[in-house]
Amino acid sequence: MMSLLGGAKVFLGPALGVLVYAWLKEWLSSRLVDYWMLVMGLIVIGCGLFFRGGICGALVVWWSARLAQRMSYVSTRDPQPDQIVRPDGSG
Image (tube, rainbow, N blue to C red; front, side, top):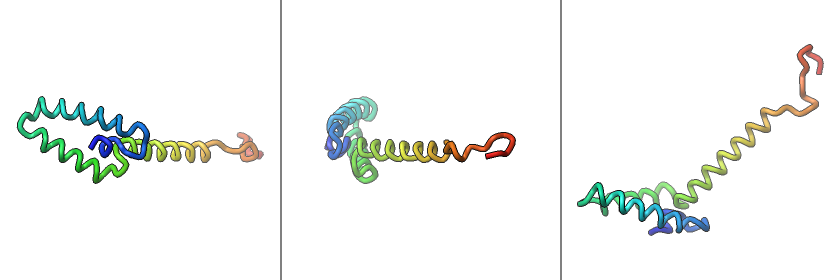
């Protein structure tokens, strides 16, 4: 269950899953004394459905997309030296 939460394909995924599971268990059991296992089960099912690679897999996908977006922004923003237009209009 911890590998499902953290992500089995990433090296640190199961370790993150243990931390998240332990924290959620303590937090939920202190606030929802009677229903914490139901809520924990729903969270694990939701994580399995929406984060196929676990939390670490989702973070890797997010970070890769963010990095690709920044790289495309930088490449379109910085003109090449032969494309610089001077204020007087000469190229």
